[in-house]
Length: 212
Ligand code: HEC
Image (tube, rainbow, N blue to C red; front, side, top):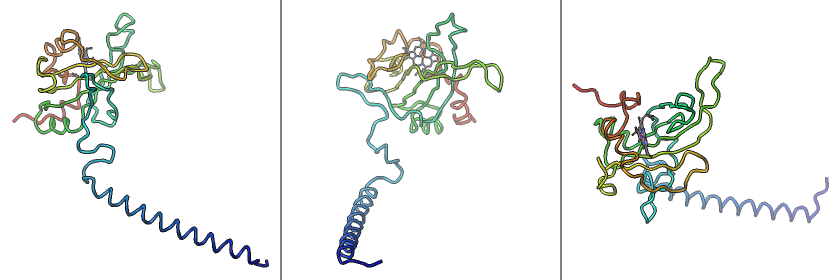
């Protein structure tokens, strides 16, 4: 092959281009390193230290929480429609999660700290038979309920616990007003320990410090 002067000029140009790109990437990389060094090492990148677990709009509505499927899981009660006259009040699987920092506090103390958030994500029963046998197998996500303890924000609620429902059908509500205490809080206050139904959450029972 004969190398023409045009080809030679072309490859010299592209060599310069590659060099320029290399310098650019090297500098960009240095900037990224500096930015990464600014972050506290123990916080994952998607949760800056000051980001609250749940957010509220200016008029006091809770915004639909995100990221909770990665939180500690505490238990899954199931109230299937077919055992509840075809229409369970909370259909059907209830996957319950607790925010990570409050879970860590619970492990140490057995108590729900101020700021605790619990998520109850509702999932339909899909099939009732699998290769493992007959039963109730999870179907689709269908609803979302949240409870939160906050002495400042919910100072007038019994136990400072407030309850929010984002609906039982997708698409879920983008934000939810606090449910009246009579619709949610009252039953939790009367029937649960410290407002949380830990009797149905083996993870919480196992995580609580053993009484000496
Ligand atoms: C008649 C009683 C009753 C009422 C009313 C009630 N709940 Fe509950 N809730 C329960 C029980 C029992 C559980 C645990 C077992 C289960 O999930 O079925 C629970 C669990 C929860 C949980 C998981 C954390 C926890 O505290 O155990 C959330 C969140 C929740 N409910 C939200 C709500 C909201 C929001 C409302 C009102 C719209 C509401 N609940 C009304 C009985 C009730």
